[in-house]
Length: 337
Ligand code: COA
Image (cartoon, rainbow, N blue to C red; front, side):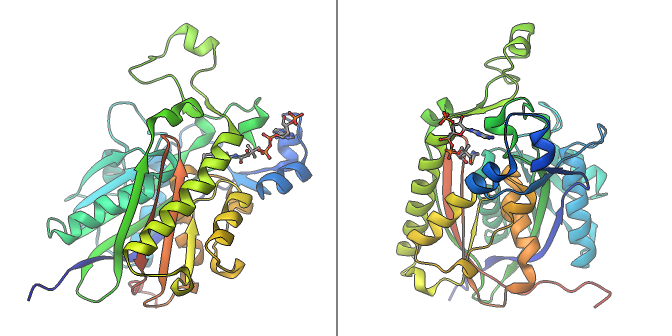
């Protein structure tokens, strides 16, 4: 009998910059107020990079180094690094390649995936497939974004929402009944009308007019995104529950993309979960795009126990959205423990 080999998360690392951008700081920059931001989004502060030498790959590397230290992971044993980001260091040269170099991984290859806020979940499924197939033994999946590089700090519709950060997980093979069980993903390209960074790619290469028109910044129709996010996350959570013969009462935790506290609460309520089951750190970090879910796993890892059933769900530009069902395993111990 073939024993199914699952991919399980065995180590986690996270990083956010030291510099805090509070709601009160934003009051000095745009016409807004802290009460409005907290009431409409749940965000109290976010972290941003204020050193021009720090790029997305640096934040990703800090998260990976923490993962290796706390998980006692030998860098030479890592086969592959997948970085999910929509703010890569360069258009050409993958952030994954930069991370492998900066973290001193001699035997790994690194690539990027981009599905904006859903990117980490997509990359997690790709990484898990490589472990399940036996092609790789240790795959690192990172979600990292330096959103401060694409946010217009004179646009109150967007600048209040985003922060910078990175989170990393290590996937390894297990024969135990834990790990990534299933995913249900969708995309809809027509969503680009409502959430996009228009210029800098091949469609609108950088030019004087793209600069003049501020097309290198993130632009969105918040109301459209808000509704689509609640619907998309709830629907895909239900799909993944159904295809695994589960009902939400059997779920221990929901780890949602952190875009807006009201979105998170609505999805939790539609699924019938209690507030304690729904993990939230948006108040401290804002929306860190691909980093929100791994940063949540990093922040709350001590709450999780072997066998806990979790649904991870995200919605983002593309539109892209989906849900992943996983059972928590055992994290590797650091040398200190
Ligand atoms: N401070 C104060 N007022 C603001 C404001 C701000 N930062 N931003 C918008 N407003 C105003 C609007 O101009 C509007 O005023 P009006 O009624 O006079 O026109 C009013 O507040 C309500 O705006 P609205 O857009 O309806 O607010 P909202 O409750 O939808 O909240 C978002 C706006 C952006 C917070 C919300 O739509 C959202 O979070 N959407 C999802 C965005 C997202 O997650 N994007 C990332 C990808 S996952």
